[in-house]
Amino acid sequence: MNMMWLCPINGLAPFVLGAGRIPCFPSAELDSFRSELRRIHPRLLMMFKANVLLGEPTESDLFADKAERCGMGKVPFSLAENKEIRFDTHSLALSACANAFIARLLPQAEATQLIDAMGPLKSAEQQIWLRAMQGWMRQGKHVILIQEDRLI
View 1: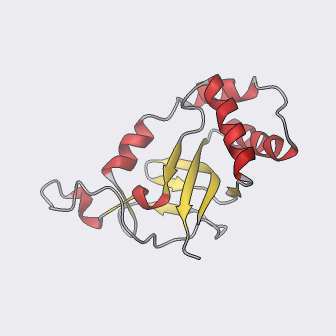
View 2: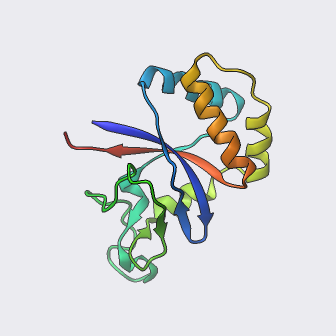
């Protein structure tokens, strides 16, 4: 089963997923929300898989065999835990794919301007997500959607 999370990014260097992540369901509401945001700008709410965020701890070594690996099978954290998740290469390292993903985030000021200009959405759930995004962005944070694969 997959779980989707609306996540603030508290820092880019080092990369830090903020606490207070919001679970996003039902999926039909989320699909509609993402469609509306893509209509405004295709990169306004980018999605990434949690297990692809991780690289091997040896990733800083350019000659390491595993340096190009994007992702790991098992994620050593849970997005449901209400705490920051820091990718600082000491305990968690970002993959090359994650670094490329981060480089494609909209500039924070542009994303804030776009999200603040949005009007009311179709459902109460979507309004909650929109308000959360607006609040985080006004604090200078980027916001992404993360898919976490969960075993039942």
